[in-house]
Amino acid sequence: MATAVKEVVNDLSIHVATVNGSGSQSANAVLLRAIFQMGVPVSGKNIFPSNIAGLPTWFTIRANADGWTARERDVDLLVAMNPESARDDVLALPPGAAVLHDASLLLAPLRDDVVFYPLPLDALAAPIAPDARLRKLLRNMVWVGAAARLLSIELAEVERAIARAFARKAKAQELNVAAARAGFEGAKALEKRDPFVIRRLGATAGKILVDGNQAAALGALFAGVTVVAWYPITPSTSLVDALQGYLERYRTGPGGKATFAVVQAEDELAAIGTVIGAGWVGARAMTATSGPGISLMSELAGLAYYAEVPAVVWDVQRVGPSTGLPTRTSQGDLLSTAFLSHGDTRHLLLIPGTMAECFTMAGDAFDLAERFQTPVFVMSDLDLGMNTWMSDPFPYPERPLARGKVLSADDLARLDGFARYGDPDGDGIGWRTLPGTVHPKAAYFTRGSGHDETSAYSERPEVFERNMARLARKLEGARPHLPPPVLEGSGTAAIGIVAAGSSDPAVREALSLLRRERAIEADYLRVRAFPFADGVREFVERHERIYVVEQDRDAQLLSLLRLDLPPALGPKLRPLARITGMPLDARAVVEDLLALEDR
Image (cartoon, rainbow, N blue to C red; front, side, top):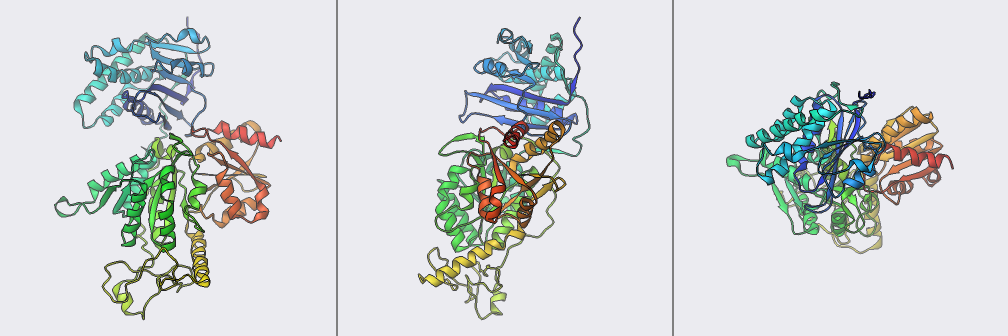
């Protein structure tokens, strides 16, 4: 008689180990969506190699009734489909985990403290697909069906998810449904010996599943982007791919003629040059790249800063330096991007931490770029950009586009003239005209070399110093217009935590663990922009010590804080910096914080 196992309901991490290029992506998405459709909060993280095909790849699905979406360190159910990684994957499991695997992989001798579920994948797929190549693909949906039975996921929800995934491919839909049913039926022979189950919950009503690159593309579409120039680079490529699809669908004029331009440039230098040129003539223009592309854009970023041309750059960060780990996540571009270029340059950074912010900050970036006539960098990362997150639907933008200080021909007719690089309003922001404005006073010379207020060439020290002081004043004046930080907690704890971007889910879960397991209270401030808002200084002043959580080696967010805050506050800041390439997990935050607290 089987021993009764106490159920663990709606709280598990599923780790699917397959081969890159084996067609497993659709299967992973189907299982994740089936759980989501049962009302259980989920997140999905793709851990893949930087090659086209052949190397091990993993996909982690976390289901959690409380809505925690950070990566879970321990795996509860391993789906072992890759002979190359199976041994190591099994040995890395915690005791009590379960393994669903191809029966041809003899894994049971490896461990006696985990549960093994061998499944004859080829035998189950053969009646559906006699062709070996097709059968290899359908094996993925066979294990999805088997996992559904083992976890009590309703087969009808799996079939709904398949219908969505293959909505325009009737034959593929039919074959994949058959494969899932075969796996579901085949799993009847497996005796359930692990505690993990999914039960209907109703906690996902009205939610959507989306990744940050899709959200950013939609936000740029609504923000009025008309020119996109880019060079492909992981993990930003899918942002432009998605945006091009949206533009082709929604941005056409009479006769289907495109009212936009998407330019795949020969390299990142050409891409940012195209964006700056388009911004100079009045288009809302952007590019998307990652760390190596940011490096190449350095000189032209300085040109846009000094010549005061609006531009938007999405930096979907990955691990560096050099080529680094192209398919791993990081926050290691913060410091270099904030001061990108040579000389005294400082840029506006927006740092989204949710899918909704990937959407809204796309619009914010364009408005800020035009208002302050400067490049704006949106600091996403691979975890945000390429992984699957649950979100509320995005708010429909109601705010009109903010084009900033642009003079029309009628405006010029009422003026004696204008100084392009002057400061008529005391905020550091000059007025500009756009090429094609029909008025004799509209013309000015755009200079990246030394210039005075009227844009005349000058190397006089006092002129250059005055111009640089104005640029600094302009950027300083942007603080109250940037997204403010988000505060969580009473504000009275001795400990404060500061983080940004995709560190947020792990930090929020870590706060819960600290309260529950160690009775430690901490306040949390998530910064969303640089230069930092005044509230950041106030938060640091209120607390005895501040832990700065980030995903890089050199504590770059902490360095920016020290540069931006009064020097007397610097000693309060303590680094909690990790760089593994893996998305941050809550246990890591807890362990690092406790290690410093115990010193």
